[in-house]
Each structure stands twice: as C-alpha cells, then as structure tokens.
Amino acid sequence: MIITNMLFIDILLVMSILSLAWATLTATDVRRSVIFFIAFGLLVTLAWARLQAPDVALAEAAIGAGLSGALLLTAVQLRPRGTLPSEALDNEKQNRSNRADLRSSAAIRWAVTLLCIVLAYILIWALLQALSSQTNDNLAQSVNANLANSGVSNPVTAVLLNFRAYDTLLELAVLLTAVLGIFALSEERAGYAPAGAVFNGLVSWLVPALILMAGYLLWVGAHAPGGAFQAGAILAAAGVILRLAGKPDIGLPVSSTSYLNIILVIGSGLFLLVGLTMLALGRPFLGYPEAMAGKLILFIETAAMISIAATLILAFIGGRPHNREDG
Amino acid sequence: MLTAHWLYGLSGCLIMALGLRAVLLNDSLLQRIIALNVMGTGVFMILITIAYRGPDATPDPIPHALVLTGIVVAVSATALALTLIRRLTEEQDSD
Image 1 (tube, each protein chain N blue to C red):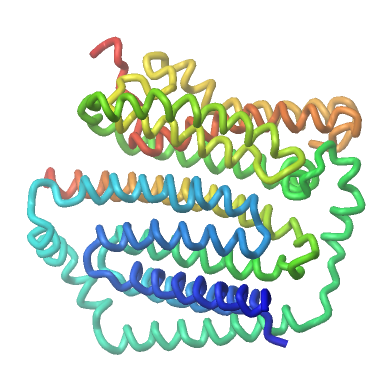
Image 2 (image 1 turned 90 degrees about the vertical axis):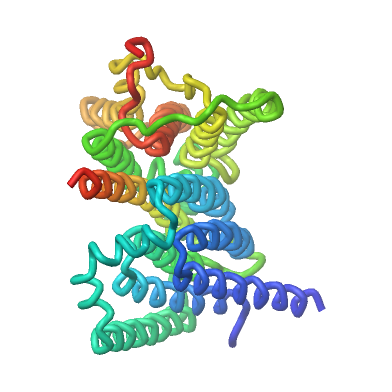
C-alpha cells in the first residue's frame, strides 16, 4: 500500500516537472518563462529529495531555483527599457529578422525537432541499458572502502573535497573566471530604493538567520548533507536580500578593491596553496595526510564558501561595485 | 521491472531533448539561456537516477558530486551569459 502511494506521488511529481519544463520552454513571454523556471527548479528539488540526493536537493533549492531565478528576474526586469513588452518584442524581432527567418524556416524547425527526437530515443535506450544491466559499482565501492581515511563521513563531501579535489579546485577557478568576465563586461547596475519599515524588520531577522544557517551547513557538511556550496549560496542569498532592501552595504567590502579581490581569490588560492604544500611535503598534489584531512577540508571549505558567496552576490549586482566613498 | 526511479530517468531524457530543441530554435537570447538551464537539469536528472540504488541502499556519491559541481558551474555560466546579453543590449541601444 505504501509502495503504491509512493508511486502515485512519483507519477504526480514527474508529470508536474514535465509540464513545467514544457511551459518554461514554450512560453512566448520571457517573464512567464522565468517564473515557470523557478517553479520547475523547486519541484526538481523535491525529485532530488525523493531520489535520496539531499546534498543536491539543498544546492538546487539555493542555487538552481533561488539564485538563478533572482539573476533571471533582474535580467527580465531590465529588458524592456521603458517600452511596452510587445513593442520591445517587435524591435527585437526586427533587429534579428535575418537570423529569425533562417531559424523559423519550416525545414530547419523540422530537422531540429527530428534530431531531438532521435537524441531522446538514444538517451532513453542508453539509460534503460544502464539501469537494467548488472550494476558494478567499482567507484562507489572504493569510495566506501576509503571513506574512513578521508577525514569526513559524508561520502559526497569526501568525493568533492578529497577523492576528486582536483574537480572542485577547477570549479572554483571557473567561478573566478566567470566573475572576472562579469567585471570586464559591465559595472554594477543601479541599486534599489531603501526598504520600508516592514521589509527592514524582516531583513534584520532574516540576514542573521541566513548567516547562522550558512555556518551550520558548512560545519555539518562533514558528516551529513551540506557543505561549502550550499553554505556559500545561503550567504549569497543574505547579500541579495540586503541588496533588495536598498542597503549601500551588501556584506562585502565594496569600498576597498583590494579586500574585495582577496575575498574573491581566497577560495581557489588557499585550495591551491594546500595542494602545493602537500607537494612540497613529498605527498601527491592535494593528497592530505589522514590525521589532518578533516581539518584541512574544513579550512578549504570555509575559504571556498566565502569566495562562492562573494562571486554569486557580485553576479547578482551585475559587475564591479562602484566605490561608495567616492560617491 | 519498471520501478519508480525509472520515471525520473525517462523524464530527464525528455527534458534534455526538449531543452536542446528550445536552445536551437528560440529567437530570444534570454529564453535560450533558460532553455540551456532546463536542458542541464535534464542531464542532472539522468545522473541522479543512475546513482539511485533503491529505497534502503546508499546511493552512489560520485554522480551526486558531479551534479553539485554542475549546478554551480551552470549558475556561473548563466550569470556571465546574462551580463553578455546586458552589454549587447546596451551596445545596440547606443547605436
């Protein structure tokens, strides 16, 4: 009976996810697309929880649905630039008429659709092969066998910060590259009007709670779902809220470029430094000694959390902050 | 035997293919970025389904770590792409 109930929930969830994906992709209005996308992200979070991936669910809720949604909403808000949405749409259509003509020609549409149907068919075939074959979890088994030596007991954190630490170091480099690209392209966009009393009251409760929650997620990541990425995203959410409330200060040293640069680089920098220290001590790159592994992972994760949060906040404000002291 | 988690994998395949179609055919740059994110989520769904080992077993942590990395890389790529669009709109307006 319980199994049938769960299956019913699964079917309901999968149908909702599919229809929201369809609605996101086919909406003619960009605003609608964004709202559907946020709802899609929230339901996908439920699917991750259902598939026993709580680490991924936390990251999806904070980043996939939350921050991506906030980024897309600000982009849409800036879009029409004083014109009505329909006029903006017309202008845009005119600007891109050549490309649009090419893309909307019936032959190309059909060819692309056919390609995607074939792709879906191949993917489903490959997935069914993978799921029905005898699973031979060599990698998962070696993770479990070495988990006791990794310094943490959450297998996902062990993979991210110990067994596959290279990947995470390069991921932090990707974040740094993205923020440098954003700095090169544009300046901070105009801020928001100062919030009223009610919103300010909410902010003064919410921001400390978010900071506390980020610290908890960072700490708990060693043995339960959580970690630097989830914690960084929660801290960034605190920054986004401060920004929305029209505060000049967004939790970053905006008046000092050098401090800001240090905060952005500290995650990948310290990670790299730890890796090189291991090399200097005659160990493999990022091969932590067992006794120190737990402490080193927490050290790296704390630095990574700070850089991740700063990167995401700066992505939200849209560029290098203006120097507040110069006005 | 068809069990519940297969449903998620199959819908992951469909979402990935639908997303790709929208990325290739949509006229609006913003909607193409959204479609790219939807497509990515389809890939994540396939990976998480492959990691699933039944209601009582621990799932494979490696695809989970891959997806976590993927989510963070996707949001930074989205942020950079949105800034590029913003710059593009500014350049077009000043023409």
